[in-house]
Image (tube, rainbow, N blue to C red; front, side):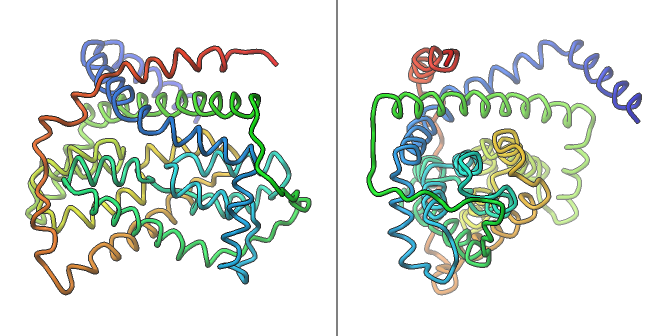
Length: 352
């Protein structure tokens, strides 16, 4: 078995080494995506989420929310993480849950069960990308975000945290911010962004490999059975692998009535790439099969919520034609992302 894996990896190395020009072009596109879209949209949310947790604000926020979930058994710390995860974006909830485990406030077993619902695209993806740039209406973006939050909440209410193997959570009475907390919050955000961008680059190479060996073209043939054009099927599988390819999917020519529920599904599921980011950043608290399974179910539920307005008005989304992208993300300067990394780099390499 080990010999077979070694031979396979050696073959992959040979293919990549013989395709340097194509791989370089793929990676250039992915680096541009990270610099122009991911880092500017995620950095502020991730830094703010870290600051909320480390300052005690997350627990205070969770204690306020606990009034509405008295019978759920959730702790104030988890409720705060759940709320922040719906606002900050995909990997943030997993990162904050892992910190709760390290602080001894929840057990690993409970974090594994809760990690599948502390997950979502946040307004940065749902409103900024899907709503404003793809559908041309931020109201649709907020609606898609609300569908995802509601679907997460439906599943979260079915989970009863047991909090075994974990001491009683510490009581936080005020929110404290100082220079050390602020610095650590920024450093944590930069470290997480490095990991996220690394996985995005990796998935660019993996997607190219799947295309090269013929797996994606083979899957595209499935769409022809249902009279779906091959380019739309390819775009579907691309965004299923990586949510950052959502713009290509929406530009593939599908009608808005179909694009909106599918976008709601993709934003809630997050794609295999995001799930791998969560696994990489969450470590032992992320169970791969549980995460994939629950996110598919949550995505289906979010898509169901998104079609509710169509039941009484089938033309409600007709005005939301897709933009031509002449003024979209490709025109964004990567300078802001470079400055973020240059500013945060000393914080990453500093010695305690």
